[in-house]
Image (tube, rainbow, N blue to C red; front, side, top):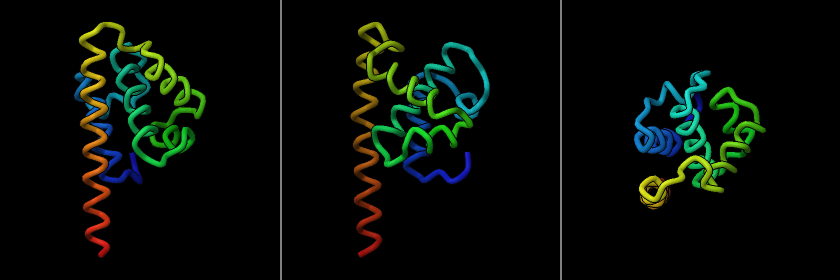
Length: 113
């Protein structure tokens, strides 16, 4: 996974941690449901909290733009996290990711001053 920023790496780590998989697994060709769900979650985090497009994200994971769109759509429509506990984790994850991205942006702006 080349050309990733610190924010990208952190978001991928968060997505992997919440799904209990390793980052190398989400970039593999595995079709294991747990890994696919983690991959979709990483797509969603990158799409939501960065300026990356579906195409950009697809290039990072060696997946098609359509697959990234499908993954983001599934996370948005709660198709991968169906029970209340998983939804709570996803909400917490989203808040954590938002804070991390905000902190990195502030640090980058401060470093540029």
